[in-house]
Image (cartoon, rainbow, N blue to C red; front, side):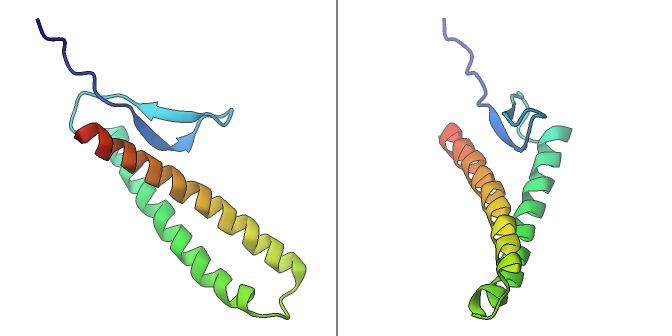
Length: 99
C-alpha cells in the first residue's frame, strides 16, 4: 500500500513574533487565502526592494553623502535583501517540492 504524498511546507514571507520562520502546509494547490496573501506580500516585498535600491544608488554613488544617511540606506538595503532572500528560498523550496 502506497503512503500518501505529504505536501511540502511553504516558507511564508513573514516571521513569528519571536523571529522564527513561519510555514504553511496545505493540501490545496496554492489557492487558499494564506497562500494568496503570501503571494501578494512577496510581490510587495520584491517591489519595495527594487524601489529602495533605486533610491539608495544615487546616495551610494555620491562621495559627499553624509555617513548617517549612508547607514540608514544600508540598513534599509539589508532589510530588503533579507526579505528578497526569504522569497527566493521559499520559491526555490516550492520548485524543488514540485519535481
